[in-house]
Length: 351
Image 1 (cartoon, helix red, strand yellow):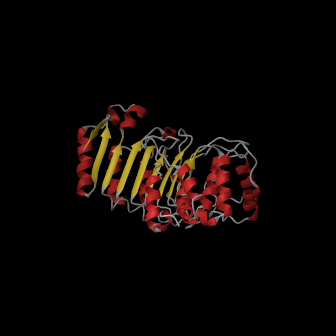
Image 2 (cartoon, rainbow, N blue to C red):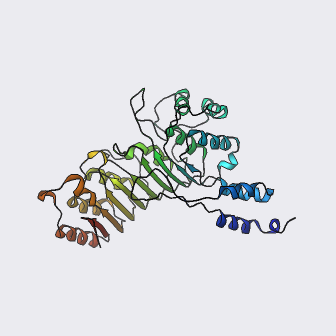
Image 3 (cartoon, rainbow, N blue to C red):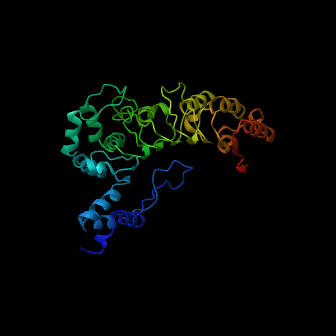
């Protein structure tokens, strides 16, 4: 037995973790960018898998820890086949970083994936329209990234982090947006704690109701970041009390939507909002915020508000121009409620 094999498994695991770190992240979290930066030395992990049974067991956990990529549907099919054949490997997937892609007819759909769909083993989300599995399968065969995302989330029971770009383009046949997270029944993703989602088409934006099935499936979420969120007229039929951090980037929601969102996440401690031109909706105004936050965000400690884009997007005139007194009044009122305000306006940061 080699000296390395005599080392405790815990120590080997620490060494592998350090030498083959997976530190994927969006290049600029302020913008909805469809690529991730970071590094993961997969070649080292592959070599370790061939060294010995002990090294194989340890390296495999790291090799499948954080799948990521925008290389097309065929790459994800290869991973899906492995997870279908080896459910124990599927339990090692803790983070999923998935981009939207256009890959129509790139290669033939593997038989084991089509068999999984046809067998009906994948449990449908609550309230999902009654499309048969052949229709869902056809979406996957066409290389639709939304269908691939459905499949991957269904195959990873211990997923803790999900960062995905959602392709919500209108279907060429039905002229409707695709149903997202088709195979995420309620409370099926107990391990998921961190969620980042953004639409591929930033002009149309996305509504919170379009990821409602995913939110219902993940009752233990604590951190959510959404890009290009648009107004939601109705309150979601769920409450996620474990969510303490909400970050809305490049979004445009009105005051009613803000209240609905805060009702869905009643225990927020940190809330960040960055305005944006999503679907050309008029966002809430500064004087609407105070009453909404003090009424619905009872546990909020820090509120970060970036309205620098509003002046550019809407060309505010004197009737909607914010002055220093407006900000001072808001900061004072929120401070009396125990909420610290950090804001940006006119491209200069204020504290």
